[in-house]
Amino acid sequence: MKVFSKVAALWRPKAPTAGQLSESIPLSNLADETQIITRAENPTTQRYRLQEHLPQADQVSGEVSPLNYAEATRWFHRTGAEGGAPKTPAAPPPAKPASAGECPPAIQDLVRAAEAGDPEAQHRLGLWYEHRGESPADATLAAGWYTRAAERGLAPAKVRLGFLHEKGLGVPHNLALAATWYLRAADQDDPTGQVKIGVCYLEGQGVPPDFEAAVGWLLKAAEHGAAEGQFRLGLCYQKGLGIAASHYEAGKWFRRAADQEHAQAQYNLALLYRQGLGVPKDLSQAAKWLQRAAEQDFAEAQYLLGQSFEKGAGVEPNPTAAATWYRRAAEQGLLKAKHELGLLYLKGLGVAQDFREALRWFQAAAAEDLAAAQFSLALCYEEGKGVEPDAAQALSWVRKAAEHRHAGAALKLGASYLEGKLVAGDPAEAVRWIRRAAEQGLAQAQHRLGACLEAGTGLAPDDAEALKWYRRAAEQGYAEAQEAVGRFSAQGRAVRQDFVEAYKWHNLAAAQGWAPATTQREVLMRQMSPDQIAEGQRRTATFLPRKPA
Image (tube, rainbow, N blue to C red; front, side, top):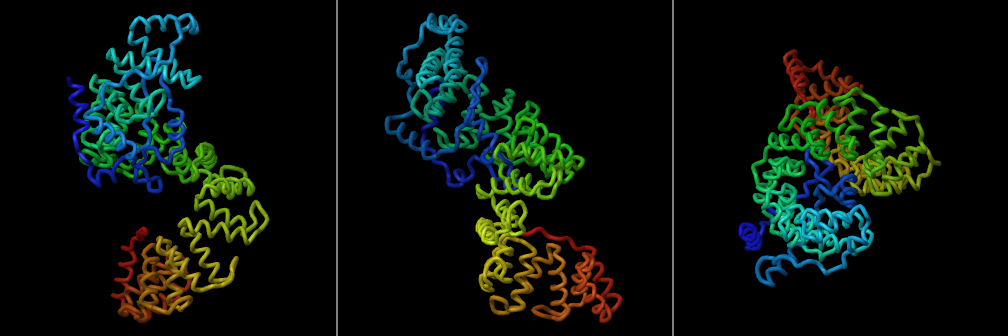
């Protein structure tokens, strides 16, 4: 009765909150390393999901289908309309099983044992049909044998039967029945079943989302040593799903899964070491775990390992190794790796300089709308690298990149309108694109927008607004903008006159070699007392550049 009471509990009205729905797995944002990935942008995981990694005859596994609230809700309401919890599913429509004599000699004994009622043999025979997959009938036969084994209480067969219902292989696609079978296996202390029902609760597949229930099942699986359970429990701790957020606990569970060669856990653990979240910041440890994940063809790890070798982060700089890992990630379809490999060919770092090869990789990534690659491709067309110069193509690609929110491309397009290069001059259109880049935090664009506002280029002059944008760029450490803020402070334009503050900004810009700032500083010092100069030097020494918001 334990199983059926829990199954019935699944169908009690318990609507998830809007917050729960919005926070559900998948937890992915690869544009920001602090958002630890699970699967969505990783081609390796996508490929594994398509192949589904059918288990060996003595194993049970299987990836989880993507989040689908609409499908889950449809089955939930359908089941409710029919009255209560799902009933024990009947065996799938019969497909006449081959007799022992009609089967390959290697499995004839297995068939005889299965027909005699041995649940282990029935399960293994189901696996054999699922592996073979020569026709749709094979999936139906696999489901039939799994059903027989499941009805005799064999937990691994229940997991496989749940998986077939989840995917609609040999049986109707039915997330509710999939969750039911997973729960029955989990109730028998089957770690894979515990992982699967935990994921169902996380993603609302066949059951209403319930993060606390998910954590409970994932913890059981994790304590049984299931690497996938440990990894997903780590994600729950990292995101605070169903349990108090804790980078320390996340790292602990990622480490346990990583020690079992779980590639995503190794990658996530590496990210924690890079950031110093829950573990001491240690780039060499990060590189070690990236290497282990990369060797398992985890594309994101290959990309980040390539970056580590290129920049010498936790490893000795090695452009050749960087190119090798970028290439392996690129060959799996990771767009940013294609772009980075193209840049290495453009610069001749780790590979022989080859503009045509650089162009080929840029084109491959640009065709799939990677803005950075589109911008690099535009520059190749403008400068004639790997291709004949073509202003029209350069303009087309820089516009595409700018429209995809590439700040550098937006600034380039604005500058083109301002200077009449690649396109007819149009100061108002120039300011529109420069402002777009400035609002994305690009310091050079912020300075350029300040200059337009100061000069009244493309819009009405406005010293206060100009100073605002100069200051944003200056606070990021942009020398030309620092000189401009110093000039405004010295002159008292749009701000109270302040020689000490002016000295600080001129001093900072001069330290970066910006000659006009050096000249202005010398003029300013003749008007300042020694105490004022000392205070200006103190402010210079305590200045820390800010990252853009």
